[in-house]
Amino acid sequence: MTRIVVTGASGFIGSHLVDQLLAKGYDVIGIDNMRTGKKENLSNVRNNDRFRLLIADIRDEDLAIQIDDDVDAIYHLAAISSVSMSIEDPLLVNDVNTKGTVNILELARKLNAKRVVFSSSAAVYGDPEEMPVREDFALKPLSPYAASKIAAEMYIRSYSSSYGIDSTILRYFNVYGPRQAYSEYSGVVSIFTNHALSNEPIKIEGDGEQTRSFVHVSDVARATLLAGELNMAIGATINISGKDLISILRLAHLMKENVQGCKSEIVHVAPRLGDVQDSIGSMERAQKLLGFTPQIPLERGLQETSVWYRAHQDAK
Image (cartoon, rainbow, N blue to C red; front, side, top):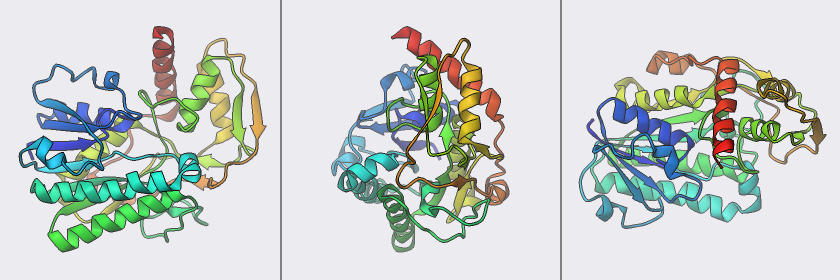
């Protein structure tokens, strides 16, 4: 591979993937509509001659014309990645996540892409009875967001069968780290960190005994890059998860400890509709097919993340 397209390129995970692809010598075209992505996430590559940012929506039907040349692979990360937003506006989330994916698959056909790597979600499993979650577990969506990801996965597989486009599906579990957007729809690490920095109450939805396995964005970007490079990953669906479980209540206390002088109270609010109780993925397949194991320990990653948010809070 030499010429790569990354959708969601100025987003949280996408921008880290762009960094790593360019560091390995690839030419990269980024696509982003800047709805949640930020140009500052691409500050490291702004002057790189091998990178071009195309400000466009993945639903735009003229993307092939705007790119105007064949590519080797497409990493499709662009999506609305919020359970809450999908419950509020399921039609929009379906339009972006499902229709947008079909449009990117059509782009792959038009640009003769040999490979598509798709970023799916652990949400497709629902609330499994066993842990860790294996890739062959039943799909039980508890939200329109999860349903949109399942629909997109099915389109990925159908295009592989119908048009011979090699594909790999990655199911991400609870990604965190620098550059994650902060809003009411953000991941829990982003929300807890920013509340701690502002001495606002850290709100836990439910009793806080629900558990998650968090994986640092740099590790996720590395796994995603490998999924497009390695032939063993062709046709596979692969979990990308952390190695250990932590309760949301324990996470809240860790975030307080990471922010010097934090005076935030930890409070409990109503459980979130569509939330799952526990979430950790089996990493056997990732280790076998990608040679991938997460390298960044949670406590170090959380400290790094709080430092990043502090620097960006001070810069505002």
